[in-house]
Image (cartoon, rainbow, N blue to C red; front, side, top):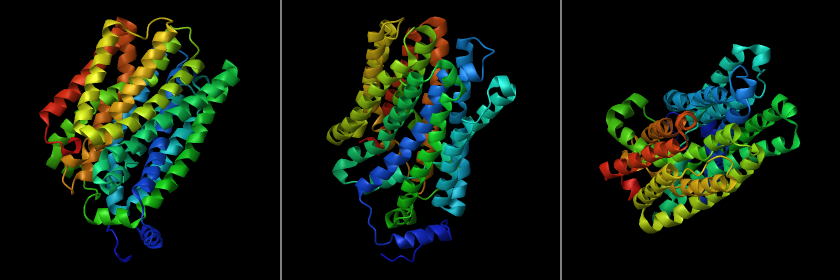
Length: 444
């Protein structure tokens, strides 16, 4: 294949990078490594913020409020990124169309890492007053805008380059970024909690994980740019498989598919923060268990999640992704019913808390492992890239963005059984969406 062709939206720098890689054929395994590194960096940033929302921000930025109220305020700011993400997608899609994907990714990942690292330098409420809260909210919105721009199409590139009989296996690989990102974030916070006094941790210890985020994002940027500059990526863009289209145009052409597609992974996305961020808040507020020790239990849960993600790839290639997503939603529904009838996270029952975490993470891995392949094929080649990005944005906003806030508000007022009700609604939504839209060939 000639090295002379170029994508209309590419920059001279991208074309030069592509020219140096013309003779380099990228195997699916190499694409998978780049995708996992990129996703792990994104999730690391978000989990660092999520964990800090429970154990840091209520004390540092909302000291004037009671612990429960301060955590609820903190979770309200947590949701801002999911509100900003669709806006970021629309903005960065235009950057992509005008200046190329390399420029878009560079801006987005520096914004993501920079917003996260900037939080480490924020003065507390005692020093800066309400301005500190406004700055925290601004940097959280920066994270959301950046995550919308970090959508690179590499997961689609991976799926399109995967062998026909291993589509489920390769579809699960990007999802490994979530448990890896959580393991890194939880281990860092657990380390500082175990080795610093509470005063030192609240003063400077909590800031180090935010510093690390910038370095992690630089590594992820180079891993992804190396793939964006390859011949396969440019070829797929030329075919229209990964070409961005204006967000409004995609909404007009596929608005119904985007909305329905957003409900397909809702069971998984609802469970996502109910086993990661929310349980930490319950442990911190309503039990005597050490938060640092509980983070290590969650670390173990994340390893279970990673194993379940891998299993999802094997099973999906045997029974089909649609069947696996439906079975996973059914299992989550049963888990939700069990949580309603006999809530596991109750009082100081460490055994119950551990069971909830391990089972929940296992179900999360099994269901989340195939969500990356749950929406793309509903869109023709012209709208596949933009449609997939907007569908993911909407799914995260509906399913996960407000989950910690809703779960903590419900459980603190009416009991933990209501967390099960919330999760049950997500499982039902997934099953209804699957039944309503049987044309979803990506789940076949």
